[in-house]
Image: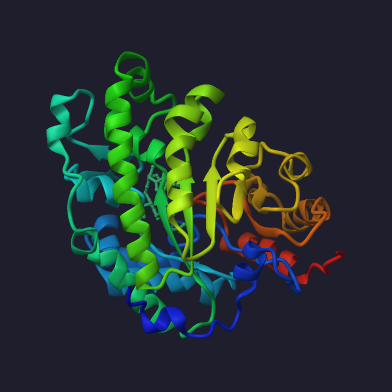
Length: 353
Ligand code: CP3
């Protein structure tokens, strides 16, 4: 396999990679989920020159530009490639629209065996998603090794949700209905999504992603047993298949599956703000790094309060195996100055361990 030359370039600030692997660190690394885009006026300016979100995602030079913005403007310890988890169903043939203020919308959904024909699962990922791998190459070249670059994909369960529901939902009841009415179809689809996702993550790594995160945003809407059958089973296959770089699993709301997730071949477990760091540490032990978990809404409070709450979180860490983040993506109307206070509080915190 030929790895991009920029992927192999020495990284100046490799704190996050060391933290993920459980190596020694001088201070906790910090970044934010959804840091690329959303909150920065500089992002909106780049986006405003194009027809919209999708054109930005599909234009590697511009995607690289907005990927690097938070590194320059906020001082985070990692970049995450600007893209979306929905590029995967789109590459399969389910095109989506990103509707302003509403979110994604798919014209075609897969709710029956016959509808499987709408999607293709056997294709050259590098060919159809070449705009993502190209954006990764350009980003690394322009970053010049300043910080690592995170690649990502949606977990099969979350991708299944969008492919079956066809849009965002609070309950994803159409998706969950299939688990009861046609579990065979559910597995048929999940197996195929898993296969493509592994190829996609490997393509990102080959292009230069230094670590990867799998987002299971809708993990929390399933009961424990169903999540084991339709979620964790496929997550585990991905975690085992990715051996090249550190893997982070972020299964939002999967409080009661943390032990099962920790048993997978991953380095880092994403923790949302409903979970208690001390609890999770007790059940996971020291063999995995934890990532999170400040409530994104804390960033609506005063600078002093942001600092206080961030320090409270940091004080709850009893080891070095932490990557600091919010408990979910940063909200679009958060003041970037508050984000900077959060980041600087982490950077100024003296390690006690
Ligand atoms: O983290 C980053 O900064 C990298 C970029 C990134 C985006 N989406 C860009 C984006 C990442 C990692 C994602 C992941 C993603 N996309 C998830 C998993 C993480 C999570 O938040 O749970 C999900 C569920 C999606 C699907 C998606 N994309 C939805 C539901 C929406 C609409 C609502 C929203 O979040 O804004 C999007 C749009 C989207 N993806 C935007 C961005 C910057 C907003 C589009 C815009 O610029 O208007």
